[in-house]
Image 1 (tube, rainbow, N blue to C red):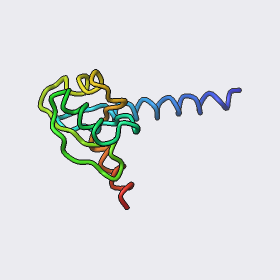
Image 2: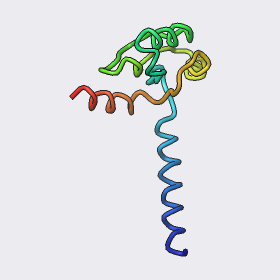
Image 3: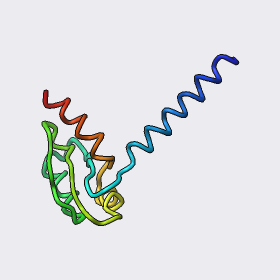
Image 4: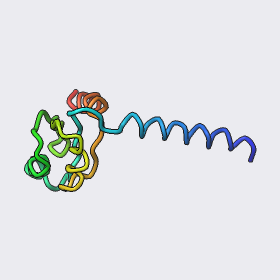
Length: 99
């Protein structure tokens, strides 16, 4: 049981760092919407949050959006986005999908 405690602390530390790194910061964010809604659903969510579409990869329900408003991530979630994360993480993921 004692050998399990360091593993638990390590796992919690990694989870905290991941959450901090994924937190949206700046005007560009990755928006994940329902895969069933396709590209039109993603565009509708971004439009409803008063943002601008920037880029999407091969999956139409994941896209990068832009807004200078500090509450943009919250507005995206209110408009129906399933997840809003830091776009720096997103670009690496989306580039991996396209290769």
